[in-house]
Length: 166
Image (cartoon, rainbow, N blue to C red):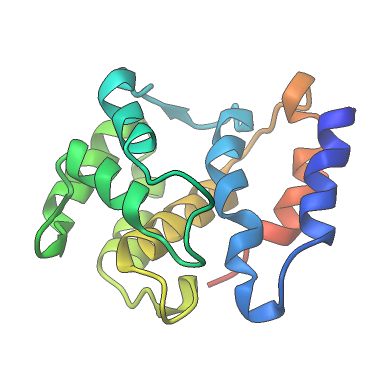
């Protein structure tokens, strides 16, 4: 129950409306674990993945920082010098999501082959907008939620705040 209160505080203490993407960005990835109705393959390359967080400059991140997201994208092969490699990101999504072709199709349509401007502030980099879009589609499509342990209350608190119709 304590965790639920902390998450709720994050939303109540959010920034100005034009900064609303910040409210949900960090929580959306965590929420994927609470969706029991969509099967995803676990990321097993944790050591490589964690390098992105270890190499981040000390101190608080800049107001809009894509450094970690770009690093993660490079580690998984869907981000390079020219930005997001849409074909590689498509392969990553197809490999990550198990047995849910409808969700993969929606992600391709709305996140990979569409305008991403509605998924974040204009200064936000495309890789973060693409990830916000991915999380939004995933959470919208989740048919069943866990309400146990760390997931208690997420559906009632976070879904209305962090999932939007697009």
